[in-house]
Image: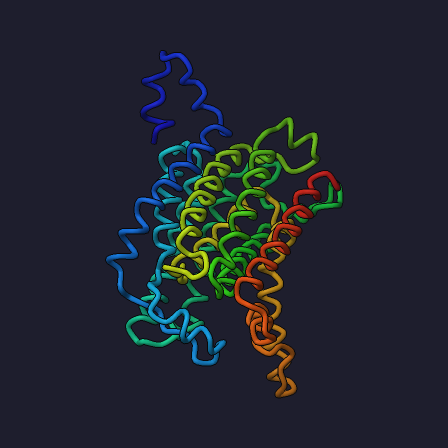
Length: 358
């Protein structure tokens, strides 16, 4: 809004052209969402007394340390991210509108899931099938709309990293694949959000990396130099990534162990969906699996556990997702969180390094 309605009227003032740069507006978006989070969370924590029931089959310590903690803190993350991105972003940019809409849609799914848990006083929310249906529906609509915004040279094409000039040009296959990426990313972040601060820091790292990637993909000189698909207009997504980082940073202040508030599905489903959507816009879906490697590990641990148990009646891990396995082995919660943060940092470095391995 500032970029479209206020800045043009201030163009005569010396120094105002600084606000036209994506990099500067990204920093402003980060700072704005951070300040919003710091202002809103104390009030939210004081006045919001709805708590999410703790899993009975989880670590027994959680029944003591986490009982009574307010949930749905992700609502502030999403509100701060979207409002900051709307203020500092170019609202004529279709990609920015698309990612904001996708994020909001997924937060609504998460809200109803959290509300169902609170109302029923159970750790089980809305049915998995219903949740999955709307996740797929919103992801498919988003993917199709994004392809409508593409230049003809890249529309309907799936690009592969590490392999030059190899693409699959098939729109139906692309839509199925990108929908899978978004839904998978959303659920992977949701599964990771099981310990205080565990999902928040990796989310910020992935957002930081994709803020850089989106900027490069939207800059024709950098895109040609790095031999990555040039996506005109993708640079504005960096502003959304900056807003997401600031909002998550503000949330982490209150979610750091011992947490004063939980993110809930309202936040985790939306943040995961947003990361998946950003990777689709930047045409770096495969790189998301590297940068977000921690989320992939968490999701795979659950799938392996379920498959192995149904097949043999035995468990691979003491408990899934895998962060609970290490808790059961005696690791302190803070130890698990910090070590998993280190792992996510390594994955982020590897993912960024792929920009030069083309």
